[in-house]
Image 1 (spheres, rainbow, N blue to C red):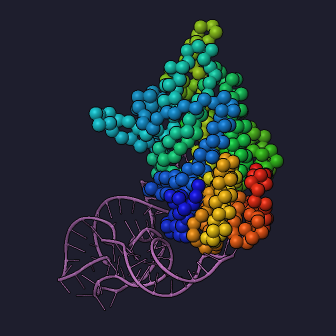
Image 2 (tube, rainbow, N blue to C red):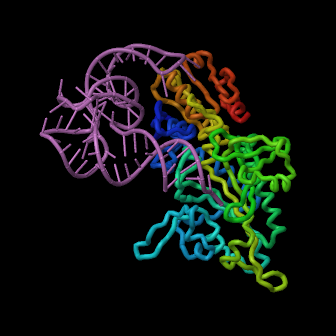
Image 3 (cartoon, protein in one colour):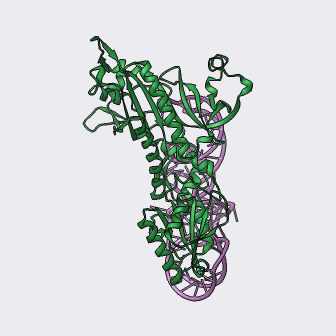
Length: 419
RNA sequence: CGGGGAAUGGUGUAACGGCUAACAUGCCCGCUUUGGGAGCGGGUGAUUCCGGGUUCGAAUCCCGGUUCCCCGACCA
């Protein structure tokens, strides 16, 4: 992509009332646009990053047997009435609206009910389970207070997976597989080291659940980490009873602020009972399906990554999450420089490398400053100097090394990029 | 939802109840410059959040509303 053609620009300033680092940086870099409080649009660069994250999650979900579906934002109150979650109480998060022909609909904030209803069309016999459905779908939550930039919004895409098993035993196996897949996702997007499987309350579903918490100053949660064991527990369940159950001692734990990047729940028969999702077992009796639900918010994940790798001077995104593999910068407008940069751009894109090519007529200082903010971890610089030497400069921003002069042959450059 | 703060060109700010709402930045044009947000000149850009009221006169004072931000509570 030629940057002269990119539909967004890097900004020097950002509205003063946007305080969270992730939103400030992503707005400056032209990744996102704030539509209203707690509602952000994704622009070309931001969507590319978001799609990288979504791609990684999708691979891991497919890897454990997940099958992708797409449910709806609009919700029929009927199925929610069956589970008792249509008319809530204090923790109401519904956006409700009216159909023109009469009747109420809601905007979905999670999908246990509709997917359980859907599964009734799939499940009849014990031969039909287990299976696992997942989706990337827009959730709407009428949060009382949106905050922390894209970490807590009123509309967001969520990856939600639902497991349908014959019994608790079968469920537990998948539950652990999914927990492992989640850790692989967090490792691949670059936050594995700081992310802990965290024992937590089960909310509306069960007594306990497992969260995945990333240690982060901007996080809203407080967790107690056992570094040796690589586990943690949420402050909300930090009691003697729970500590005894987990065989942990208070003095072994360290307190940290953290952000929840994933959460997995055992639902058991809470929804299959309520909605009549039954199968016939080998003896001919009708049994409720044993369910679980598993969520990750890709946009929140991007926000957490930015919080970790960003500052007011810019960011260096992990390669797996960056919108482009390399930022090619042409310094100067001479025919020699332009020609060499154009050639390099073509050669790399022809080889399938995703290149953001800064071909604009701007000063070197501006280009570097903007590139620092855009956050692509690898940089190629073409200038009078490099052309005179018959080379191109390569910078791996993540290591902080000085730039190295490489031969302009594409093969060598490809090797550096894939290193 | 409780408490606190704010709203003026795209962005950041200024303006005693009184002159054509000012300055910086951005953006556009020209010249110059070109390895870390450079310089000069010219230009563009505002229904001062909305609706009432007070006044000869309102960005400014009063009433109502809306939106935004922060702290707290809440959070599959």
